[in-house]
Image (cartoon, rainbow, N blue to C red; front, top):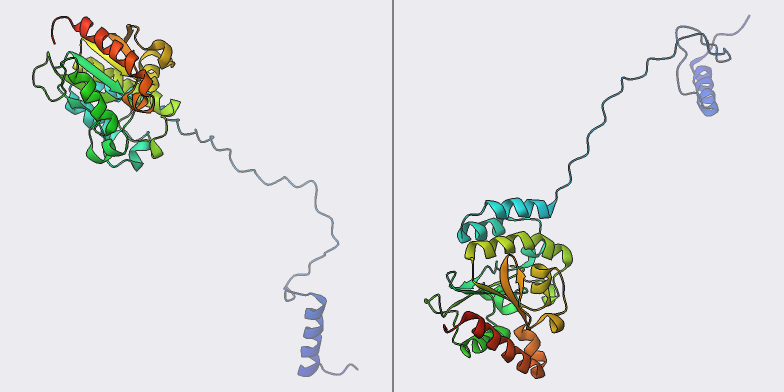
Length: 260
């Protein structure tokens, strides 16, 4: 006759089973661990297929710029539209939106490249050393951005309204995003002639660079007669180019006729 299981023996037996790896207590019903699965049983019903999630539509910054610019019916509205445009990263690092300066009724509209440090601080185009040279150049043929007379005044803007970091050249995608706003800007001002100052202005208006070849030759940009010229910053770096710059100014004065 077997002796009764003492608590000590039961505890020792349990410890031994745990040592062997047992993790569950014995159930009420016996379980045959050696039994093969029933292959005739129906497989579990797979979950119902769900419709694939459509990817988010990619934003086209240029298309949005075209739509936004086209909806602007005044210069003030265009400025507000530019300020609300979020796809150009330059707007996040700039201090000011540099929109324009001068008389919007002027016969001559000048398009520069992008604001520099002084322009970013002041919020107006061409106010640094290059801008001071530009003012002297214009004065030599009787033009002044501060004049209220449309015959003698000029209107000035840039391809980019925000300063690029370290005054680097604007990138092709930045120019592409700003081109619709620039074209609308020209359409709203409706000048008699455009002055494209520098390679970036020529790329935005003519679709090509090469200012040393383009300068001095009248062409058309944004549906308006246009004259490519050296940028004043280039003239400051290359004083020998003053001769060509003066020839271009005389060509502009001849184009405008007796006035100014």
